[in-house]
Image (tube, helix red, strand yellow):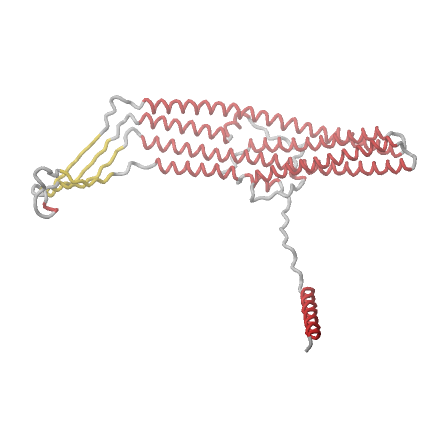
Length: 434
C-alpha cells in the first residue's frame, strides 16, 4: 500500500470518528443546568418567628445556661477532705528494725468536714437563682428588641418595594411624556424648550428609580442581617393583612402597670434581689465556719487503734469582712439605682410609643381619607387638561410632582404607622418565652 493510500485511509478514519462523536453528542440529552430553588418572599409572621431565635437571642440564651449552671455550683456543701499521714518519724534514733509495718511510725487516716454557718449556702443559692431569673428576663427583653427591629426592617422593605413600584410607574409615565413631546416638536406642535423639560423630568425619574432600587436593597440586607443566614431574604410579601388598619383601636392599659411587666424591668428587679443575696452572703462570712475531723492512728509497739477527734475554727478578730460587705452594699445600691432608671426609661418609652402610634394612625387616616384622594384627582384633571391643550407642560409637571410626593408621603405614613403599632403591641404584650 502506497503512502497516498495510507493517508486516504487515515483521513477516512478520522472523519468517521468525528461524525460518530457528533451524533453521540446530539443524541445524548443535555443535562439541565443546576438551579438554586427560589425562595418565597417572607411574610411578617415568618420574620417575627425568625427574629425570636436569631444570633443575638442565641447568645443571650448561652448566658442564661451559664447562670443556671451557677445555681448548681452554689447549691452544695463543702466537700469532705480525706487525709492520710505518717508522723512521729524519729530521725535521730531511727525508726527501728523489721518490716515497714513494725517500724516506729505513726500512720493515720482521717476525714474532715466543714460546717457552714450563718446561712451561707442559702444566701449563695438565692443570689444565683435571682441571677438566673435576671438572665431569663434578658432573653425575653432581647427577643422583644430583635422582633421589633426585624419588624421595622420588614416594613421598611415593604415600603421600599412600594416606593420602587411607584417610582417605576412615574418613570414610565415621564418617559411616555418625553416621547410624546419629541414627536410634537417634530410635528411643529410644541416648542423645543417644553420637550427639553419633559426629557429632563424623564431623566430625573430614572435616577429616582435607581435610588429606590438601592433603598430596597439596603432594606433587604438589613432584614437579612437581623434574621441570620438560616433565613435568606429574597423580598417581602406585600400581604395586606400585614399592614395594620387605620381603624384598629390601639390596646389600652395603665402605663405604670405595663412598666412592671416589661422584661427589662423584671431583669433589673431580679438583679436587685441577686445583690441582696450577695450582701447576705458577705455578712454571713462573719459567722466563722467550723471544721470537724476524726482519724484513726496506728503506732507499732504502742497501739494499733488510736482515735483522734479534732475541731478547728478561724479566729477573725482583726478583720470582720468589712471589704466584702462594703462592696456588696455598693453593688446593691447600684442595682437599685439601675432599677429606678430602668423603670423611668421604660415608662417614658411606653408613653412615646403610644403617642407615636396614635399620631401615626391619625396621619395615615388623613393621607388615605383626604390628601391622597384629592392629589390623585388634581393629577387626573391636569392630565385631561393637558391633553385638551388647556394646560401647559410646566403646570402638568408640577401637578405630577405634587401627586408623586403625596404618594410617597402616604407610603412613608403607612410604614411609620405599621412600625409604631407593632412596637406598641410587642412592648405591651406578655413575655415571649416561657
